[in-house]
Image (cartoon, rainbow, N blue to C red; front, side, top):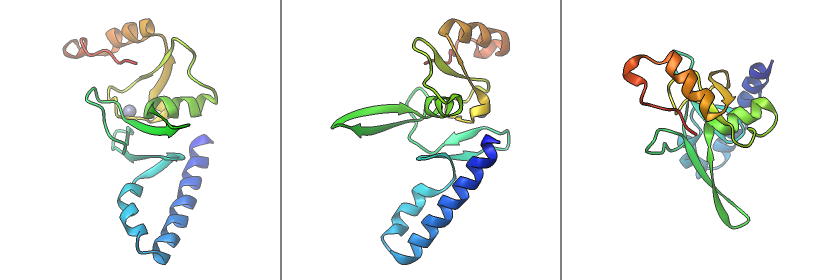
Length: 141
Ligand SMILES: [Zn+2]
């Protein structure tokens, strides 16, 4: 249900952007940033064959997709996977909790690959699921 809605919504937005492109030549510059599928407003992804949705935002050195936005003159940074998780939950991730990944791609923001848990849950879950070679890679925050 959710995904169908998003897909339709994103196609609609895409069409809208295309119409703008025809009208204005300066819009062509923006086209590069508009590639990919928009899963929630402002967040676009490239869908991988394994179902992972890789965020088109810049990646931090630790692998998380992040974007800085100015709010009331102050720059605030957002994690792509957290925003998507919160969008699916319909509420913020609880204090002290974070959005973890089922897959091990920190850049992935597929809502079906994300879950809310405590850091302790995450380490336990990670230990159980990860192959030995990956056990040092904790998925935080
Ligand atoms: Zn994934």
